Length: 363
Image (cartoon, rainbow, N blue to C red; front, side, top):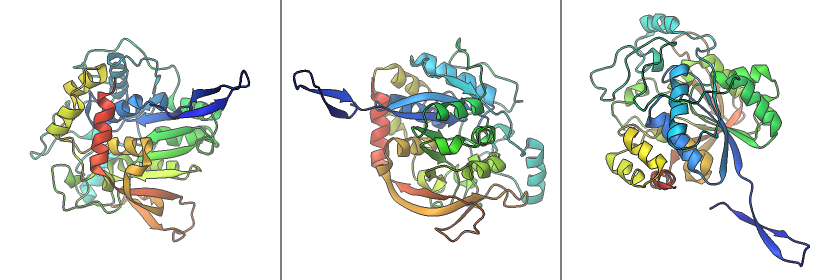
């Protein structure tokens, strides 16, 4: 239930109850699907009773933007939420490219994961994924093709327009690469300053390397490199320097000890609602709860167990550390505009799982 507040009524002196206003959020996501750790956190936020999702902006990352956009449109159709606009955004990073990434790998070694650029999978990986394809190709959707369309507006324009429409009220929840946010910041210098806050999934500081699974190669040998920042490092740096009032970073560290187990998936999908039915069919069982942790931190920051205030930046030198996370103690940075952010190191996993189950079961 949403919180209630008392409003005094002059007519007869009767006290009336009125619902508190919902928190406004725009979700920015590389919504590769169906289901899985990109779309499940969107479901969480859509299901929260005290939140109004003003729109979902899409970019490339785990998959290509066009494919991600239609997966998002389709999930909204299947759960009866076509009232939420979907806005297509960036297809390619600002400077980084597939060709440059291949040249980088010849100099410095293979990246464990390259998102939409991943053309071969290691034998250790047990996750199914569509075959490698070009950006303009949208393979047939297993969940069916959407009949709805994205807004006739770019994601950057939508982001900039909405924060001007509701100054100081909108949280931007960014769970994919940051190209759309960087473009919005260049389109409107006041974009970040007019938002309430930024909560983003990205960066890596000191993830627990004792937790070794098929995903740990993404950080175990390069603990400061994380995919969302590595896909478009220049955008990640521009996003951090855009002038936000408040930034919360949810890095790899916070999600490395989480997993959508079969038991957790069974609990979350046990309801009889369109959301529960969609989740049950397309659940990303076996994945860490990467973006779900960021969504949960937005919904209830108190699930964070360990946080730190750090100055943060991203390496954009195109050498061996391209895209890596930089950090310093508060006031200890070089003074080049690096923002101070709240970094979530660990979360209360039982509370995270309980929230996940409650939201996905909710009618």
